[in-house]
Length: 169
Image (cartoon, rainbow, N blue to C red; front, side, top):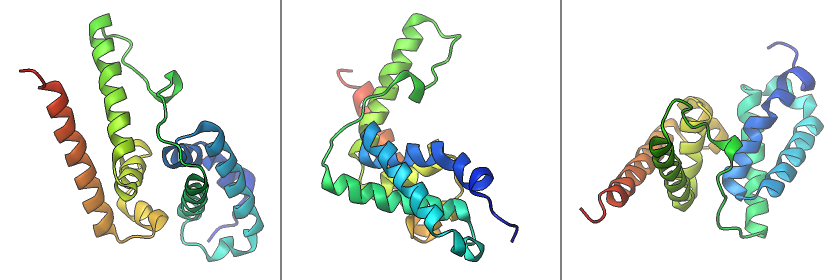
């Protein structure tokens, strides 16, 4: 394995770690604290980096565990969508843009209501773009468990969105 550098290999993961921490803690300031704490913890274990199969999966696992610890201490319920968290299509008209914004808000609320394992697996796969192996390592699950959790999460969200969109018809 090549020599790892904190500046070149670990620090560029900070945004990804922040999004994961935010998904778990549901609090922006808390997520920033979690990422800072995770980076310090990863740095303190720098002698063990050579033994890691994937430093990225290790960082995700550390962040996940710290975020869970933080969220257990502070029970927050929801996170609001901000402009920097979503990227609406600039070519859509006002009506389409409003529909898109409403749908994104519903998806965000529905994702927040999922069980933790499903929520985290879906976040890492659909939002972060991780493969099943990386997710399995980060969440300390088998790839099959990850696939099942993602399938169930998508199915629940799809079903709830259909119920919402077809309400009153």
